[in-house]
Length: 429
Image (cartoon, rainbow, N blue to C red; front, side, top):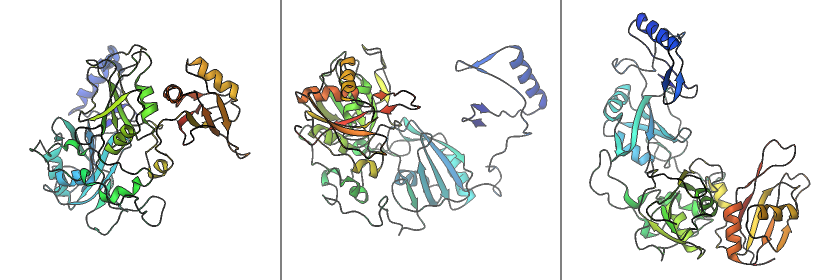
């Protein structure tokens, strides 16, 4: 039994002599697993026990823990219900993303849970990806407070989606999502489900209110094919651009999951964003310094190589705290703004002066600003914000690409400040 948080595991032998030989051999000669030395010792446990025994129908748990490995496509309650319910009646589903993507599924009976585990453990939801690893969960019942893409109580269909932090649901500016984003008919069957195609991170009409702060554009004039959550970015500078700097620019328009430079096409990268609307927002506000088109590729870490600055050609940003659209509250604070010559800066320590910011630009070989403005802050505020004006929009884009999310340390400070930049709605100071 694996204990990943402790980096330990329990191994039960059929006889004590087997455990004796294992400990003895591990003591005499080092054993390496995946490049790390493994240490063997006796456990205080006499045997490995599980919450249930699949061979005994009279004992067990009707809640399963599903871990989805290599999740190239979104996993929702609808997907898991479609996969599990034909085998055993599903009562409740809760999806969470603490250690990758996991879900708990509660069934009508222990026997149903045992059948599902036996039938689906190790199966792929979609061809070659979204592999199910199924174990018995500790809870015996799931508590669901709302029905949406991440939790659902099929015994209480009246549970409606609640707006975060509000007592009632907000009115969407554009109403229902455009018809161009309607559900597509699935193609040929895969192992468990057919591939979702271009429906990656498609929002349902119930989720449309979250778009109130950034209206959904109609079909992009830059996309010759159906909408996709992956953007292809070309005309990139071979020595100045890397995965982190692409993230610094694209994070203004939506969450970034992965960035990968294409070895076969120099100066070109694939950017996988959180949803197809983020790609549309980015293509509608492009900078003319790079070309952005949406494509139907999935970004996978194949053919990873070293860029000219020594960094990796592939980087996963799905768990970074610098993504700015991770919740409805965060998303509502972002104004989707095309590039301008004025940058809005925030989360800066109060002790940093105008001269220090100019020195920071010089140290990173980017243009300096020509005008500086700091907003008045409360005496108790731990950070300050303001505006920086540059000679041109191109210079502002370059500075944002390089200095966005730069770590600023102050004397006697325990944690660094993360400088955050975005394009301002002001055209000049």
